[in-house]
Image 1: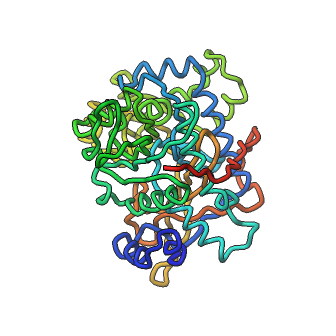
Image 2: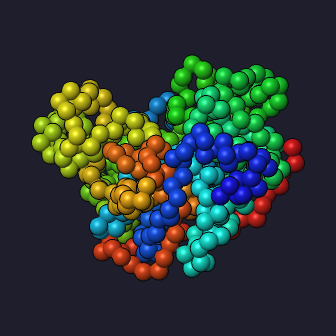
Image 3: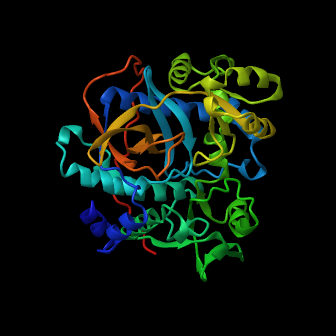
Length: 420
């Protein structure tokens, strides 16, 4: 792993710094899933991506989306993240993220893991990852502009150097530079919008890889980026429209409602796939508050526009005071699916760690699969023995659920070189 990071960055000190400052970023074990489980997750993703394009779904989602999300500029969203728990009846989608972190780090980890695992258990997406990322950047440009290629890309987040996943910003910068892009890492306050162009340090920015958790770009410090986005002066990916279409937790109430999907005319095989793979979810309102409180031990409560497991609660851990906060907020209640577990060895003793599986995708196609090991109520990067782990697919079917569709094909992209 250390050698892989040195090759990626050209900095021999990068790995040592990563381990010292983020000791629980990577677990030292792999996670194994069956080929059938991986196929089922891919089919759930494909079903969701199909439903999201349906006019009735889009109208329902835009009805509660913010003003900045109303217009579709064309981009599909770089590094979408579909998070799953492996339930007894098959994979269960927990949430969708539009700025899912960790893809670059997990690609390095997976390549390092391949050096000591037989090819039969290797993730077949890893070898194509760099080309797929370069393809994704150009595709997002073409989706909005129609043709051509961006020259300058900005990776944007608040105080990027202070972010826990800042090392992956550096990896993304190096990868895109190898494919001919000029790339800067910037705080949104460093951006200027003047004369119809978004600029950083005087230079024009063509495309923004957006890692902000201000999903609607409403914060005062993000005004330059917001206005350039709304004017179509810069390609922003992911952007407010993509977040509204996919990642607002209220959308899960639509995707898990077979009767509603049937009224919209969604095909029955897609409805069946979503019923199998998306736990029942409903909005928390005063009308259902008493029932949800009584049934709270079977529920997981999430804020509609939350991220990173912030302000999420397992129902069996709720207090009356927290329940009152939930009722005042805009929350959804999702049927709780217990995560699977994996044994790790710590100080000579075996310990259980919970697992979730993330599929990193672009336009419905899988770029990479990775796992997060953790202890506690929700995923975190602070658990001894936890952190990111490679997902290795093995033959077989070890769950009762069965995929009903062919998985989407992965991107077979050649590296795209763009002159600056």
